[in-house]
Length: 374
Ligand SMILES: *Cc1c(COP(=O)(O)O)cnc(C)c1O
Image (cartoon, rainbow, N blue to C red; front, side, top):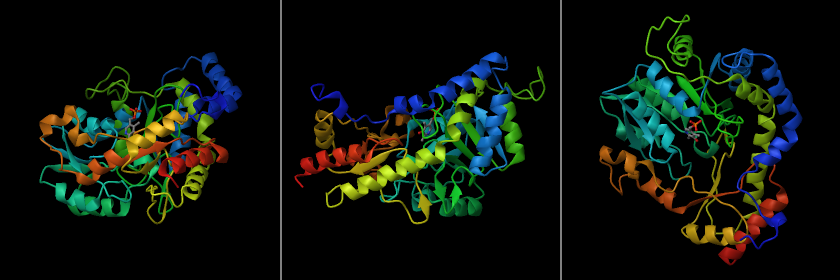
């Protein structure tokens, strides 16, 4: 692998490239924060919250320490806890279901749709019990979950909806940005996310004023007023430095997402005719390709061949949550969620970042074609 010339290597993501372009602006943002002293919940955090809420199209946003806390605190603020159940897709990053466990409620897994890889509304119906309090759809890989069907089930059954939009900043479902459909929309600003900080960060968006106020209090030790604690709160704040960086980057988000969509269209063009299954966006959605995962039964061999050619790939994710050791006590077994299990076996994520060039995508595709014998 190392013997290939450096210039030919294709990384999985390339943050260095992004930060090189933004260096002066990021340094100016850092200098601005350093010259003030409001490092926690200062002006930058407030400005970012206003700008991010406007971007998603919700009246409120709250900056938090990370995406996991956004999920956890929204369940808390919705009054969900011990004795309750929250329906989560079996195929997602573990943090989605961890947030349910943190709240004291029980994650109940549901299978995904084989075409969209999002939680399957029919599977949600099957997972409902009298203890169900909420549904947590995940916009996996930046593909919007079927929010019309999910909101319809939630309305009929009186359930809350917490969107895990941690991979889907800016993705559109029927013309509107995800995160704004449910009671709460949760975002992560982990550096490699579509909108990433230079450290950890997260946010929650909502249309509900009460929920907004509750989250603002929960993130800051449950103090509506300094040293008055009306509940046991947390320390989960988006700091000013990260907020300042995020303000610089938010202005680029649409352009970056367009770059990802362009890369996806190149992959589609160059991989035509291969036996790989490519991502299939549902009608009337505009995904943001946090991850570009293709599917093949020869996944492991393909990864190896690409790796040997200096092309980095990833697996998102190769063990579904119901088969993870940490959820063993939920009593799930292999075969319980066959669509998730099959996806875990045959998905491989190809290099995807806004600045990836047409030539780089062509190079990845050429190596795939060589592997397929096409
Ligand atoms: C990244 C991510 C999270 C967690 O976000 P953190 O900021 O790392 O806590 C949760 N859910 C999904 C789907 C994610 O991709």
